[in-house]
Amino acid sequence: MPSPPEHTLFYTLTVQALCSTLAVVFIVLIYAWLAYLLGNGSLRHVPGPWYCKVSNIPLSIYEILCRRSDIILDLHKKYGPVVQIAPNEVSVADLEATKQIYGTKDRWAKSDYFDHFMGYGRRSIFATKPYEDHRIKRKYTSSFYQAKAIYKLPEIEEHIKSRSLAVLDQVRNGEDVDALSLTSWYALDNITFLVLGPNHGTHSVDQTCTERGILEGLKYQQFIGPFRYRCPRLYNYASLLLQRASSRFRYLSADGKFPTWCEKKLFAALKDPRLNETHSLVRHLWELKQDDTNTGSIDVPYMAAEVLDNIDAAEATIGVTATYLIWKLTEAPEWQDKIRQELSALPKQDDGCPSFADIDTRVPSLEACLREVYRLHPSSSGKNERLVPLGGCTLAGVFVPEHTVVTSSVLALHYDGEVYSDPDRFLPCRWIDGSEEQRKVLDAQLIPFGYGGRVCLGKALATMELKLLIASLYLEHESLATLATNAVSMKQCSTHDAVPRGLECVVRFRRMKDNATLE
Image 1 (tube, rainbow, N blue to C red):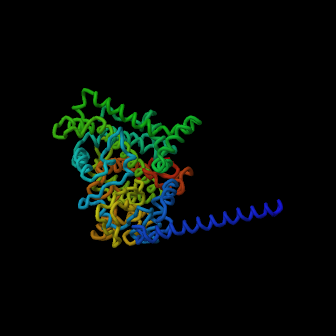
Image 2 (image 1 turned 180 degrees about the horizontal axis):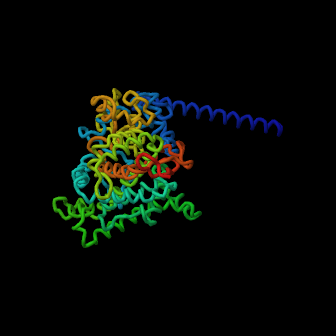
Image 3 (image 1 turned 30 degrees about the vertical axis):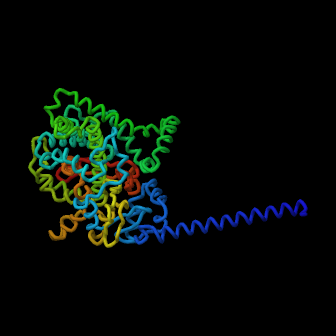
């Protein structure tokens, strides 16, 4: 019989042997599992890193770090136009494949990701997944946002111009200003005017108000959005704890305050006896609701969901795009000069500004700069997910089975060196120089508003807002860089609204006259 020391040694060796055996078994099982996934998965033939083929964790980490778009761009550079980015998800960077995914022929449905964007228990157009349901809802508002409706109503141009002049008033004194905040307020004032009507719109550019605080909170929430979508229950629990622990985390309540604010605004507009006298989306939807042919598909909660989505999307996208346009012009003063010269040659209206019609058609430098900003800084997360229909499909020569989640990498398309020379550089001249055929090639791959039957309805409104704002700011002023903002702080992040890392863009505007600066 072993003595106590020998017994202890025997026991220790036995435990070590058992642990070693279990470790070997565990490693073998993991290896077998990985080998099975890599060798037998439905996407095993699709190029991509092995770790993305076996787990969703890498993609989740990319999203939580707000680097999804950049990393997927790098993967496309390494693996080609079709890349596996998760066990059941593929990214595509091919124009013809993009047309196939988002076109009207095959009618691909949206993924479950869009469940996160329901409002008041209803699905807005954006959150509607089946193609046919989306097509029906799109008819409700498409005529309201068409260019012929936006551009031919003088009150819309007058209001947007008045808001752009309000922004100009905020920068006239030559002090440092945050372009992201200013342009977000500007966009909110414009979209609430159009959605809620002139009697219920905001005036956040020139008035300290509740809306400013809500927008600030929503901007801060951008960086926790991916975690919120990936782990909603954990996020809700942690959010409540953090808000109770410190006032520093009050911004976490913004996603609750904003829907409440929108709902109050909607009800106020609906109760307004002057509703039928105004041009607004609320009136447009209310009249559709009264139409018996809609068979109850439009109710007040659905109207609220559309109001919430329209205001949120229009404010965010215009704010980000205008901010990057101002930043790029600040970095490239020669393009400020070109825009100013072309604006100065236009006839002025009573308010001292050119008409939108002239700005839109007779200022090629502004059009070129805007297109280049659309290319370099698309204002979306890149999660435009679709589900491959039954039977699967072939994308860019690679077969993708049914039910696979597919996205088109807008960033990879916009940074395609075979289409855009020096793709990392801000080169507006690419949209002016060259033949008409060359410009058609550039235009074809520029898709900041999406493609196909689900292209963004707000393109016409966005064009008017951006061009009138830049014309107001740069007709007699120039923008200068400050020490508060640099390339690092302006790095675009893969949040839902693609905001800059620093959440601000501090610049200074200075008055000019006859091409000379007035100190």
